[in-house]
Image 1 (cartoon, one colour):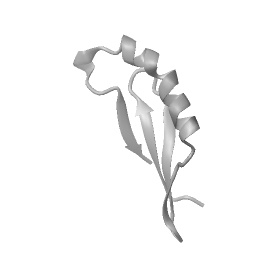
Image 2 (spheres, helix red, strand yellow; image 1 turned 90 degrees about the vertical axis):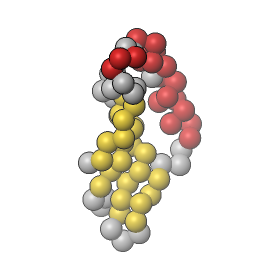
Image 3 (cartoon, one colour; image 1 turned 90 degrees about the horizontal axis):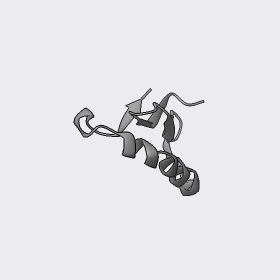
Image 4 (tube, rainbow, N blue to C red; image 1 turned 120 degrees about the vertical axis):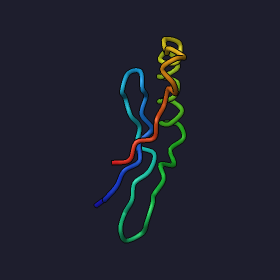
Amino acid sequence: MTNNLLFLKCNVCHDDFCIAKYYPSVGWHYHKDTDQYNNWLEKHKECALVHDPLYGVIFNIEYR
């Protein structure tokens, strides 16, 4: 069972993608499926187009 999760979160549509999980017995386990990650980034290209530059960054790292 994981204790902590690390997410990449889109500030425009508020969708997130889990990039790492922390297991107390073995430590951090990083998401290694690059196809899923690339698909998630592709999906958020449109968010970058509607993004207001004054708002700041498009993606944030979120720790839960």
